[in-house]
Image (cartoon, rainbow, N blue to C red; front, top):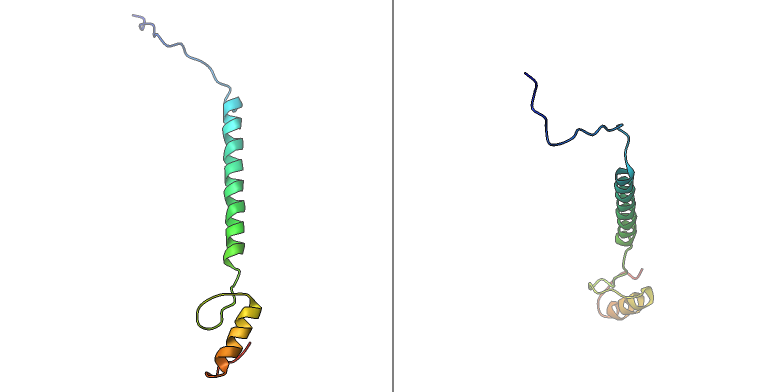
Length: 80
């Protein structure tokens, strides 16, 4: 007895990636590269330090030094 014929035809594949596979892998590599680049930018931004006057607020180095001089008149604070 012979097996019944199937409705779906069997397609053969060479095993090599097709155009859509290559396009997907290219997009995946681009996304990974973009995320890595943004992560490096954020790391550099996070490593920046702000100048404080000792009271907790931030400002430019000149502002922090002048504020430290004003405070040091009535409170001994080392001026950087």
